[in-house]
Image (spheres, rainbow, N blue to C red):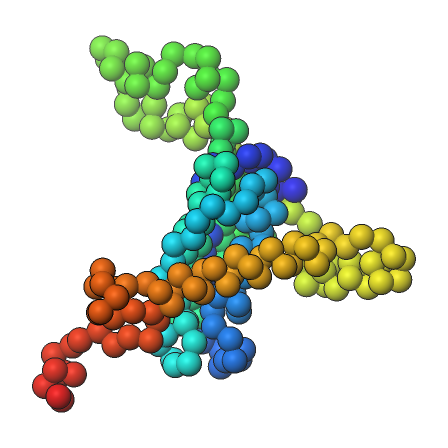
Length: 229
């Protein structure tokens, strides 16, 4: 429902990071964490992915632990996704920008903040024109940015636990034969995009050349390593 406040987003940014837990070590951060944001982005962007750019690095070994990806869609939307499981703190957030405004979602605190242009901004005297008038009170105009020019809304969010609701929906679909909220087709699409991200990470050329450092399993040169031979 929060995403309904920004239909047809033009840019999406997500961040899903956490400390290293020593769980899910048989997969990398793409299939561990990033897959959730890929699924969310695909659900709100009514278009297919045109291209994928990504890079990442393995810190703990065996799989990528931190990844930055950019998805470009056929309709022009761009999504920048960040995932890391070697962060000192945990954060799960997403922002969407579109013609209707901006929506910021904090999945950890379960808070949603929506920003949209007010009628004053859309149809009144432009803020910059007001600021350039003789005797303009710039401090007052600064206070008017959020409230007068940009409306700020904090809609209520359901207190229901997302994982519990997901499992309940799954059980209901089995017992009643109803269509699940997220079906196999959507899950497959998310996995296909995740595989494209992983391929891009594995092919990333850190030195701009296939003859240099490529992929997440690299060791950048340091003075200590150089001296050690």
